[in-house]
Amino acid sequence: MQGRPFTMLKTLGVRGIIVTSSSETAEYDFITRFFAPGAGIDEDPVTGSAFCCLGLFLSGRLGKSDLLACQASRGGGSARVLVADGRALPSPSLLISSPSLRT
Image (cartoon, rainbow, N blue to C red; front, side, top):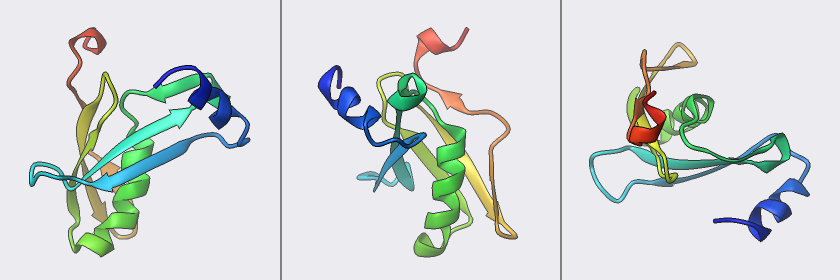
């Protein structure tokens, strides 16, 4: 996704937009994409804050406190999110799948 869609997203006047869906495979509990063109980031490849926000939201719906999320961006990755006592914590490290981001 390039050009016009990001220009249109900038006009919304928000910090970021999270798009999520259930996963088509059992490997992940949910998938995400995070867009923030108004903050100068067309698409963030891996967004821990989005994983945690969605982890809190989806934990009750899915009946799970240990979730695995996948960011489906071009340079995406995945993270484990643990939900306890009304808080969501990402795993100690995000699992980045794009070799170009592992530097």
